[in-house]
Every structure is written in C-alpha cells, then in structure tokens.
Image 1 (cartoon, rainbow, N blue to C red):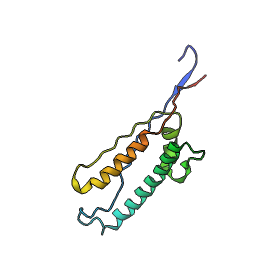
Image 2: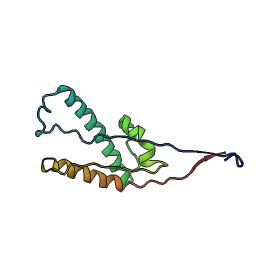
Image 3: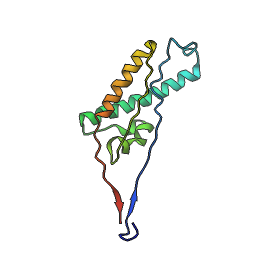
Image 4: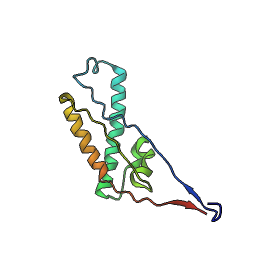
Length: 124
C-alpha cells in the first residue's frame, strides 16, 4: 500500500506428495526394479516423518519434529505456522488398492484435524 507504506507478503507452496509408494504385488515387476525400490523407500521415509509432524500437531505437544526431513522443513509454515493449507488426496477405488485407499483417507482425516492460525503478513 503506497499511502500507508506497508508491504504485504505471502507464500504459495504446492507439493505433490506422490502418495505412499508400496511395492504392489498386483503391478508386474514392481518388486524387481531396484530404482523403483529406492524411490519407494525415500518417499515412504518422507511420509513417515510428515505423519510424525501431523500427529504431534494434533496432540498439541510442545515439540514438533519439523527438522527430521527436508519435506517437513519446507512445509513448516503450511502445517503449523502462519498459513492456510489445503490437502488433496487422490484414491484408487479398485479392490486391489483398497488397503492403500483406506490408509490415504485416514491420513487425510488426521491432516484435516490440524488447526492453523493465519494472519496478514504486513510490514511498514
């Protein structure tokens, strides 16, 4: 605002969490691909630490483990800081993917329970 000489700032973060990467027995060859296995381990580890942060925020515990992974460090403002957050969960309705679909829905419910308190970022 040029009259009051104030500056408003905001941040937009878009993160594709890629879902939980299970080596699915119904996908041919998924358990024999070393690159796929390495990626699945890395994604699952990041999601593990993210779930730890979500659980800590829902418990309102004093210490939230944001520093355990790069993903949780990046999402610190969106999860427990001065921000509004939106999560989009995509699911697979097939019978073969039902356990993963249920797990995704449960995680989305835990994320929905996190409360953030946003305010306008304004500097003079």
